Image 1: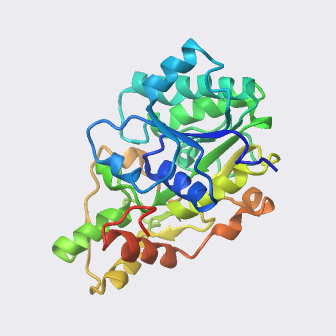
Image 2: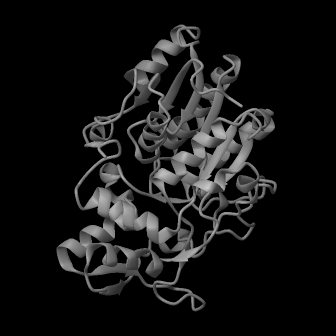
Length: 332
């Protein structure tokens, strides 16, 4: 097993949805020797860090500049959770995505391996594209065709790690549709749970996209939804297991409809169900995924599926304990 208490833990993208959930999970395990890096900018993501416990924070450009100037400066870092990336699936600046998601991950992974550090990074289910080649983390990744540049930037590093033999030493997490506390800052990239909660509170109605495929009724398009607290617990558990290398799907392993996602929100809020189906923007239609479902056999073999909870329970926890009282992780 990999001892997380040995040396310092680096969490990049630590103020984000999954990054902050990982810090909260580490805190719950009694770990606070954590260096957090991110780019806080001008939004409210800093609030995600306020209740959490960690040793230090650095803007990622400052960390990179100091690391580049003296690679041995952070040699006490023995575990890295690399969540720092642009996660906007609608981002059109390909050069930015290459620099931010691909080149930076290449550099950090090489440094981690040279320093003997455990390296766990965020890939994405977006690498699977429309799913025609399956969503199996134990099948070859070369045939995959992501539908957007975000997914492609993640896929490029997966391929780089494969070509260079990294996947025998590091762990890539293909997160599926993650929702949960600490996503307030994500603007148009917030989850449907967050969006629906505010729609219900303001109008009493949830708006869902219509389906443009006859085999899927409106609201019956399916995704693999996973709570952020579950995603964090699974990620930390995999990091603790040195044998858990390569790519891992991290999802519930069961596709659920958008209707099944939003109905527990109405229930948790004590509101009657009222759902309206609206037209999907034409710009989204070519890259829209109608069905995602993680194959989690590999995850199960490492005992990580024990952290999964039913979707309805995860949604209710998020709504009742975080959205309604407007709380962040760590404020419990």
